[in-house]
Image 1 (cartoon, rainbow, N blue to C red):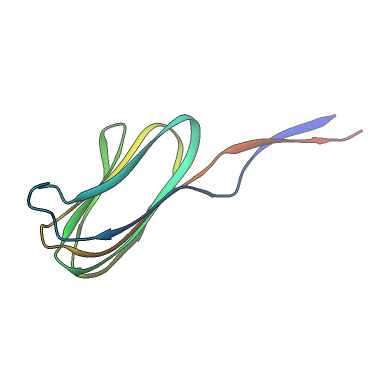
Image 2: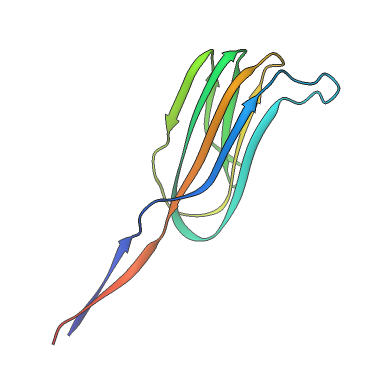
Length: 124
């Protein structure tokens, strides 16, 4: 006789973005950053950010399959968040941060994933 059970693996840091936020170049006219990825199998994920704005402000948006799952206004100082765990998800994840033209600071955004593994216990 044997038993099969599912167990979750440890969290893996899948994406790690570190950026310096600088005032926008008026010719580029874009002061945003972001990352995205696609899950081709079901897994759990969570995201986190720590954005320290010494000047300016911004807004962070996170999408799963083009559906907004999180947004937050960012203000001067430290803005920090770790999401809930999204279980058994499959699809495209995207995180975009839009900053004001005068924004300055540091940004760290991360995506963590974990998958299920099947363990077998064999008894005789």
